Image (cartoon, rainbow, N blue to C red):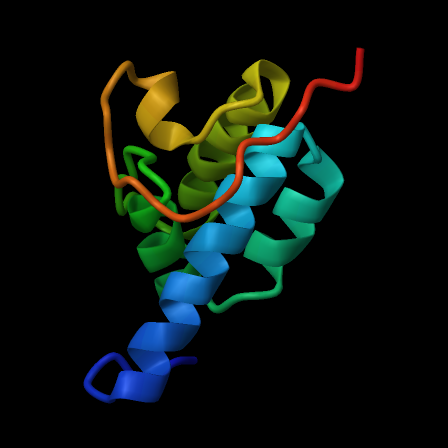
Length: 101
């Protein structure tokens, strides 16, 4: 579990957010799922919010079901949570991913 009150913890969350957004834009669902499931639920909640997903704290099983469903949809559309909801979101320095076609 990351400590949010120190710089190292905040930076670790930011890094995971960028990793998740990259995996979603690449359409890499297995990597996105693996990233989220490797985190404590509190950290996964922070990462999901940072990537633009609507995260409801509804309890452990329902949280994972909702979060992973949103991530799967984002991967299928090759976008992050902000784009999935039609919002601008955070502009990051992640390079655009070329289509595989």
